[in-house]
Length: 295
Image (cartoon, rainbow, N blue to C red):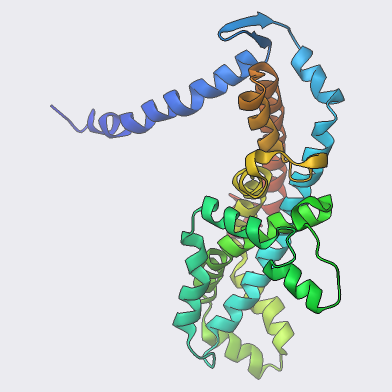
């Protein structure tokens, strides 16, 4: 029988068990296997820090880091600026059909990454009759295979695909934040002679700061752990010159493509440590968790 003393443990037990089985144990197993090399199907041989030393000389790591960091930087900038500006437009009283535009922007977020990836793989293909190359032909330029052209075009394709999917969701975040700012503050600033830019920098941005930090956080970590877009745009994640190779995709390809579980685990441990350091720096610089009067 449940009592006041045992009820909290009973209701917390499913989460605790799930956390131990699907989070804590895999993390322990990841660290453990990073010191071993898989030989055969189930035979592991202890190799010490050899897997970690391989990371320093692996030629694929720099390419994967460039793609991952470039994608993260691009998606943070684009998905902060564009959704915020669109949210301000949709929040304005004079904007017609606001609800229709809000729904239209949000619909791509309901799309599966597989469907979106296949669509943009066809949209960015090298055929002359694809929509993008047809536009390039009209402008007097030669058709290009955008996904296999250069690393820059590959990163742009990744940012464009991800932005198309999550633009509407970020717009909703900023719309919700804008609705928490009282119109009286804007009226008072207008009476005091503040311009539109001054009202934006001194009223809007401080008012939406918590949501701005939240969106920046999920975009940063979403960019660093990006896998689906790259895997689907380049079928199986194999690209010439590692154009679309990201850190997580390389870990996946090493583990399940080459069955080098030890090396994949070592890369995962290093990547996890880097994320924890970035998380600590991020929390310290942004003042997350501090009280408003202490910031």
